Length: 125
Image 1 (cartoon, one colour):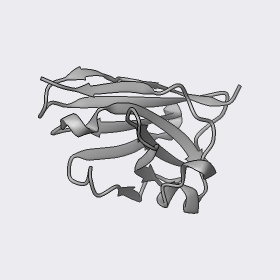
Image 2: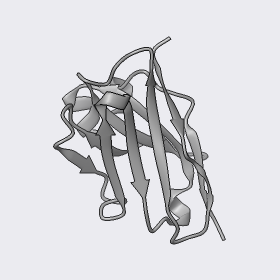
Image 3: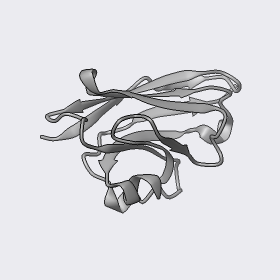
């Protein structure tokens, strides 16, 4: 089965940091744009960040710019999301997936695939 396995979530206080990992299972990352998305209870899934095939280009949703950093290690088939200065509104289940340039950079979740089960991030004091 082709999917991602997300990890690294947990409970953190406001202002804290977490590093999420997203490991490919059953395929290699080399040829894909990869995006991180999140879904909070009662809300639609929203895009967080996207990284290009070679890792040279990234884009971020406005609400995480300057706080989150995305990079990839194709040799390890893993993508990482460093999250700093976390806020309570960052609480959500975080997912990664692959997609086309348009789906990934446009944060169009319907165009993404190989979704994992996600990792829960809770920001609370």
